[in-house]
Image (cartoon, rainbow, N blue to C red):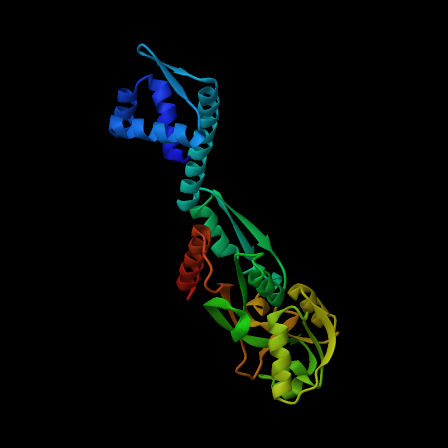
Length: 295
């Protein structure tokens, strides 16, 4: 039994006529007669009995008719919901955004919500490495993270922007005359850096290894504003992306360029070779459009 056969049967009962049902469904009468005969053969029962000009339902026919009405109604609802999703009138997008990136995503999120108000955004805020794993496990559709990702991760990437790294220091003492800081010089000071589940933290540790630096890590945190507060309190110095530093109080803090080719490159990631929903594709276009206009 398929939906089309069920639709033919229900329409014949409604119209009380094979001819009128055929006209309404834009098929020939022999086609409908054949389909209903096949349905009766498949169910091994009689569904309709002709009584003069009337078509009477058998007990079995009445059950099939009533269930058929419900099934066709559900199928129409399914078609409507799929159409809504395809036209982005509804849906769900599971998105991962590390806390450090959240403040920079207000623009793309606002643009997406303006264009597709019916699509629900479910945002998970974890470190870059955690959201990468969530995407690989299928728990998230897309995520923003620091690039590059491991070649063996099975992830597709869309680079969006790149910013230099700065060393955040107090605006006082010796720091007032320093114009740049090398990775080797970082070993002389207590460091405040992100937790291990942040991609930037891993990249910084690789940088230290490459330069033979043994970092004196004083504090790890997942919150950039907390790290900035620790710098202001004299606990140590922090390594932060330039856009985040620019949001801080320049009267009490100073950010000095890190003398390194390492930069903060961010992009969207998703599982390679998997189906991207219409909402996910729309999100990528919003991100590309927004950051392109910001350049």
